[in-house]
Length: 272
Length: 273
Image (cartoon, rainbow over all chains, first blue to last red; front, side):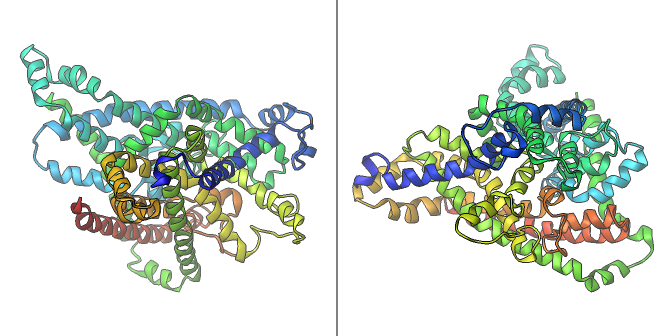
């Protein structure tokens, strides 16, 4: 009885806090190492001098600027294509009866289970046949028709009352107009959720980009970071930390700013 | 409009179709029949990798699910500064696996790594954590738990928030302890979420291989190799695409089985609500 009403038991609070600190510590540690001279990276002296030299070094050792541009291009391209394709496909699945719809939708659902990652070997062959190896389009293509996006949007579209659509049609709206004026605005939270998940997924994606790219001009951040951070490269640890921090910074800052939105998006996206 | 629905939709669908039907269509094109599958049975590395994957799954899934549940319970309750705590738990989720591996690599480095430094305080000698077959898996498991628990937490959080508050009030009136309330009410009600998370976690345990590129490259002596990474090695380091395709088929079969199990379980379990 008491535990329910009084504030949180002290012991549990401490445990929760301890776990939180434990969970943050690897990241905090990376920050520590990145801002201190390499020689001091392993000594936890609060008075050791701060430095930005590691960032400068990392920036010059690896073509980070190029990687950044590539990642941004990749993420934007995938997202744009996904939004268009998934909207249209989801609309077709949600509101039209056509022959084989259920089978087709079943096929889409299969892709929910079998992610493009698993088929790296086959996809690589497809890409080389298309001549898209080592292009940013090649990295993005397998992900553009996202089953997850179709599924998510279809669910949302289905909840929108048909009366709204009928009203719009009476007003003389075309089918595309209905989609654009009625469905898309009403599904906005879903779009935001999906966009956040998609962007963070592709910002962080690694295996497929690694396979498809083989030059500096197309490699996204994660691949660049992996090459740069591999033990063989001989770069010292503080510099690797700095590089790592740089690569995760945009997403991390976005997360810290829009925490609530992020978590809700991941939640909504996962639960459907 | 119908036209647009139909012209764009096939474009999307064929793209998806081509992605997975080709995965199996490889076999006839090489005219080797089942030779690749026979080779599979004789390949000790394949069995080792499969075993590794099993241990990896067993090591990461139960712990991360239990932790996720605990985190969600804490964060959902009247914990001081819970927004901060929640953020701390969730942050690893948005980091790329590569960056995570970079950070954790340092913990495991012999001599100067954090683990060895901590061990040194207690008089333990230096350890090559990632270099020894006995410890390497443990390291990967620890890191994966760290990465995933926060992600699973949000599903539990969502589920907890959808539980009617009357339940807790009723329990309060009955004088039930928190512990009792959790086991008898919360835990069973969270079952659908647990199943969902369980399947996700299992799929992830086959899918997550990025960190291997940084940390171990499957070594030492394949002690930390996982199925998908092995496929990558076979296809792009040994250039044996036929065999890699065979391995892919196995992986697909595994995932398909998982999917079936998932649907079965959901059919059976979800109705009691």
